[in-house]
Image (tube, rainbow, N blue to C red):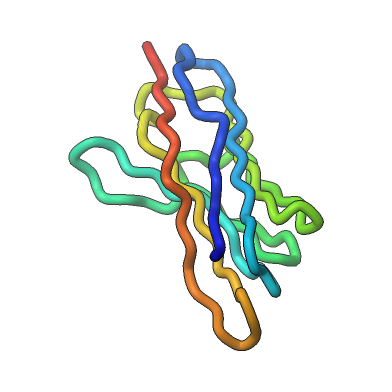
Length: 120
């Protein structure tokens, strides 16, 4: 059974910083892409940032220059460093990963979500 467990959410003032982390555990042969989505109340889930196994990154325009995604393949963990947070960053943040529990059977896996609230 593969699981993604997130941590690091919370309440922060505008302009502050938070670090989210997400660790995959269980029967894992290989992890390809990892990343973060977020969903604000009344809005659709949107991609925040993604990172390939080799380290190539992709960001939503709204977070470029403020958020940094990274990963540690030895720990099956992805991180999201969030700086200069704005009230509009308030959302539930979900970690995802494309995981092969065994080869060649891979699938998308999701974390349970962690709340990030930015006060003005």
